[in-house]
Image (tube, rainbow over all chains, first blue to last red; front, side, top):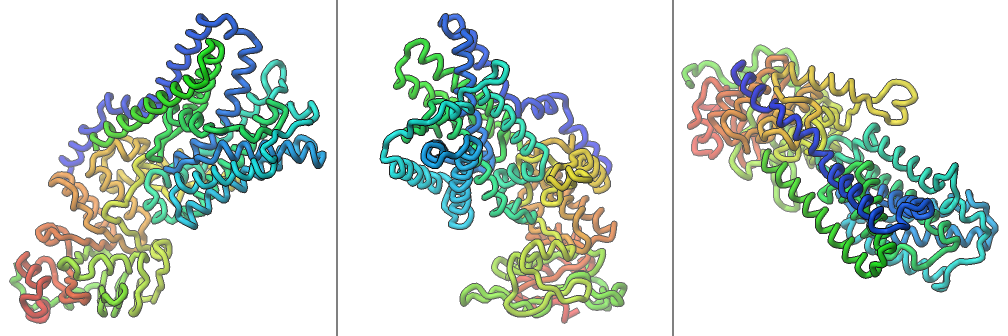
Length: 335
Length: 272
């Protein structure tokens, strides 16, 4: 027996393994961060407007919405799910938030709560479709995406919600000592969710379910309840993000967030979240969101057409997912 | 072996006869539609023994294991733990009664660390209000995991290593160790070495022996007859949904086991 132990002891404890284990999680994050820096420097050189205070403020606010919703997406992706409904749910939340201010005279904080409630409800619906009706997340949230967008057009008559007080802009365009208020909210959300995922039982179960749902179930985890909880929490963040987006343009826009799901899925995957479940960290997602926002911003500054932006984001998604699969295969071939 | 005809299967249990079996199934019937997988199956495990459960494909091994571990509820019959009748509606019920099961391939969450897997579903939380918020005490779990694995002789580089980075044998050792750590009565291992090489199999069996020596009862489902004879104290044979034989491992050969499984002889334990 002692010889067996001796061989196991030496077989797997090499410094190379230790290093690989340490960086295996951070590899995507480091790659994304490098790309971010390179893009940032390149845009600084390419456009005289890029480093202006106005533009940086704008990037911050733009990143904020993508980052908050990408944070939501990351939680769902970790469970091996996906949420395609984020764009239309954000639009619905923003539109409803704007309507209760305009038509019912709600104060901003109450309207924000309403928007968050709309997101949470949509999240609950997604969660129940996945756990109770057992519809795969891709299809369940595709349905919610369509229903949500339909509702937005029905309640607004496909017309934007205007005529809001200037105070409505606080979330999206307000600032605290020169820092966009939206960025402050984003930092709070990101730190909070990162803490939840890495330090709490809720987070542990989130990774466990995405990694091996059956093992999680047989470990006595009430997977239906927890999975639904993840979708609800994601919905809360999507509602908040939708409200900030509406606040930025001081109106509820029924067309907001079309193909937003692509941006946020890209942000999550670039940052290291695995579509196979079980992996993903908020720090990576924030970097990914920044990268996407920079691509969008840079394309505008360099006068690249919106159609090319779509192509660029698509290419980034391919690259990120390919990299994710490559990493998985390498890890598994070691097993 | 098989040289002591006086020692019958029943006399083999003499030393523990005073204590009721730690886990016992009596007359278990389980039907799936009109297929009767178990037709009054009996099964007995005493404290501190390794019992191999063998049987041909379709004999009902899997169904019996799933009944004992709370995955299936039996249609008829009774399960007793320490002599007390119990009802397992879910695997969680079985675990509460001290019965832990390692399933063939559903054992661990690859992306989680070794420590997180050992404590999955039983996380240690911080004390005080932080714990009530669900805050994990990761340090306590790391230390606990390292100590427990060390005691069972499972060597892995670090308990913070994700399971995905371990070899198949190490992975299975972790899964088995996890069951042993939490079980208070019985550990059920369903084909724990089926996918492993010789050396890795040896390691898993070492862990099983250590657990047995520490007083744990182990049920081992296996198709590997030499392995069964190597590790088990007793063998219970299932055929056509019923117990066909109870044998002492040190008295029989693989041929006897095969004969009992296939029914090519009448019930082997009666002959002896």
